[in-house]
Length: 106
Image (cartoon, rainbow, N blue to C red):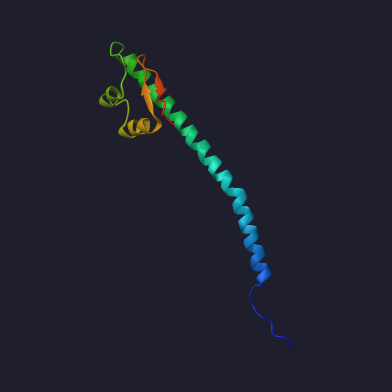
């Protein structure tokens, strides 16, 4: 009588590891691509939000040009988190109150 062992054979384990490795190689690039797309969309949305806040500020204070981040912070048009994100993205305002990117902005 032959004893049966419980467990997996070496070939089964190697095959399972190969399949897991193959799936990982296929999935990881997509995860990075999706993350990059999400970051880019978030940055574009932040830029539009800041532009909207600057436009609103100019509607309520037409004589107070140029728009600066400090003015928007002082009058609560921007939060501290939005201000920090502006710095991270390299965003600033031109003399007309439009949001622009610094040359070193992402």
